[in-house]
Amino acid sequence: MPIFISSCHSSRLMLTLLLGITFLGMTTSSAQEFKKEMSADSILTLDNAITLAQANDEWLAKSKLREQQLIHLSQGASALPDPTFSLSLLNMPTDSVAYDQEAMTQLKIGVSQMLPRGDSQSLTKQKYQLIAAEQPYQRIDRLNKISLQTSLLWLDAFKSAASYRLVNEAKPLFNKLTEIVTASYSSSSKNTNQQDIIRAELELVRLNDRLINLQTNQQVALASLTQYLFSAQHLSLYSLPDTLTKPNLIPTTLPIPTEIELALLDYLSTKSSQTKYGKTHDKIHVKPFDTLYERLTTHPLVSAIEQRILSAGMDIELADQAYKPQYSINASYAHRDDAPSAIGSNNANRADFFSIGVNVSLPLFSLTAQDAQVASNIKAREAMRTEKTLLLKELMAAVNIAYQTYLGSTQRYDLYDQQLLPQLSQQADAARAAYTNDIADIVQVIRAQIALLDARVTLVEITVAQRKSLATLAYYLSSSITQLNPHNNTHKLKSDKHHE
Image (cartoon, rainbow, N blue to C red; front, side, top):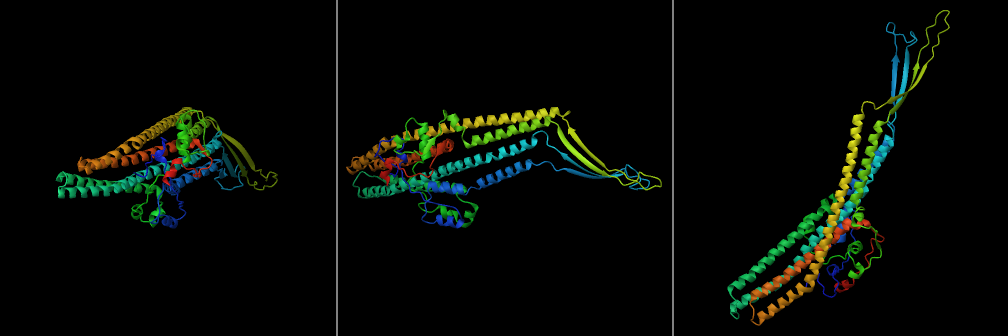
């Protein structure tokens, strides 16, 4: 029997998940530590793969830089425009070019300051802050998405590795059957013909082809994982082909479902996962939303769109500011030289001038353009709200698909574990006994063994499909869960004791 199958318990939904695993601590603080971690005797567990993928994701650093950029822009938006300074020489006489000849000749120094239109300054600052606030939600979604993608690829690699082991374990039996057929044909002790020998040898060739295909699938899945597992520094220090082709890189058992996955199944199903799986999760609290729609509104992608909607609202308010007048103030000081001295004149001293004023820009002839800008921004916000609705519909469909896949996989697992595999095992035993008693031919024995092997491989595929659906549900719904102790993995499933 394969390592995944247990008939010791009648629990229906979780027999395929009762597999213990020892989690290895793996960090990526430096490339040298990474190289040591990927030594010949290391094992790439699912937990390790997710940790590596999240630690080596350059997109997260890019998002943080983008957020910092927007924060700097919001800080700069609170500053007033630079003042304008002017220096002018006014009313210089052209006949003598004498500064003191005419009373109107003056050297004028001025300054003017433009003021923001309405509340556009504070609104621009708020807009940048709202755009920046989208990035943390994007990073949360990115981490969850990396966890999902890494889990799917790792599970593909696990499926191929587990199937490879099953086929490889069955190969000696088919070798033995081939030897028996050949010996029987040589001795003519039984009704064995050359076609039986060809059939046995053909099945061996098919097994070898199957092994090659499974090994290739595993390497393809691991190669796909490299985009998440390795940073540029790691790629430069380690040989990827050697890393991927190491034997026993993937563990032989699946990890226990996380507390979050079990809590999500509690929410989606009618029975408590504690009674189904024999595992408590008192450190997990599911937020009490009335509907799946309300629960999905807490998804990071939805929250990010809500931030964009708020930012679009700022664009509308900014466009409204164009209807308000814009003010500028100016001040100037003009120096005049004293008049030339004249006999009997008492008016030699000339006073300097000081001026101050206010300019107002009124939107009298641009109302059509401003109306169009406001209408455009309103339509843009409504488009984003429609995008949010479409996203929620997509998320709801994806959750339903994942949950139906989980239910279907659970039903198929029960069918294989409780009926098909026991019956196929009995059929294989009966075929061997019939052949031994010279009642059946060797072809029936081979067919029975192939059917049993195919069923065991199919059970692996069902197991992996079930875990993929759990990982998908965790991606879509884990944001609605408060995990009080995310590192609490001390509880084990009751039936897991039989695998230790």
